[in-house]
Image (cartoon, rainbow, N blue to C red):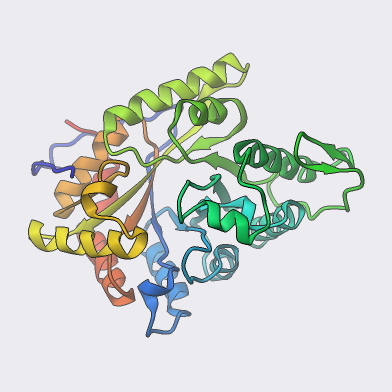
Amino acid sequence: MNTTASASTSAARTAPQENGEPVRVGVLVPISRFLWDGEDPRDLIAFGRRAEALGLDSLWVNDSLASPRIEALTMLSALAAATERVTLGTAALLPVLRRPVQAANALASIDLLSAGRLVAAVGAGFPGRLGQPMHEVSEVPWPRRFTRLDETVALWRQLWTPGSPRSFHGELLRFDELPEPTLPHRPGGPRIWLGGATPRALERTGRLYDGWLPYPPEARDYASGIEHARQAAADAGRDPGELTPALFATVRLADDKAAGEDVLRRFTSASYGMALEQVSTIQAINTGTAEQIAAWLRRYVDAGARHIVIRIAALGLDDHRDQLARIARADFAAAVRQAVV
């Protein structure tokens, strides 16, 4: 597991910004039932309001059928009405769980209700219980899932662009007559990011998507990944500076390292049925004091990340609220925005 040494933030300088883009910090809303079971799920809306009031930049939800949860787009609809400033995003949305035209209208509706604050990070799912079974229950073939994802996103963008053709003919998705779509608030629709860090995912990010939301366990892998994606964008005739470099990171603020690791072990077991040591080899995940975690995340900022999506490792909604309060007391988001000295 990653560890960091304590680093002074008082001497830190302002992070360099790429194309004038500031470092932004957001938090995942804990919509999985095991994280709020026994409490009023409507308190998740209050959690989102509190995060906005504390100065965080964005609120995110994940997406799955592998465990009970508040449905992702339903949660974002509620947050659209309850917040005013923060970006609302999916981290990540699995389009395969929804019919593509219906999903386009749902996303456009959330963008309208939030006055253009939506970002849709998407993924194609993983092998094993967190991927293929969800395709089966959605009655969607598992083979060629990446082609299906790319075509779904292309279809959304076509539907969101006024005056586009009323037909769509891809390799897998084919529609001879499309209905008149719901147009989003933002011209052309929400920005769409891609998760994943394989060479093929990086190439597709550069060619087809607006941003990158991975969770590599090492900052050096992040640096090489975003360079690869930007080169792919340039090779496709796109502006590499238009790609938003984001990071999904799981953190537990704790003064006692052993206590923090104990929560991480229980959290990863409940989330994935996997040991912490195994998850740590594939995900950015860490525990420590607010200063230590901020210093660790600033390594990714120094590697190019400009939007940090924090998943709080907590057990229960009360624990999430306590962690959110600790983040506020430490002015954690401001510390993450500072560059490594």
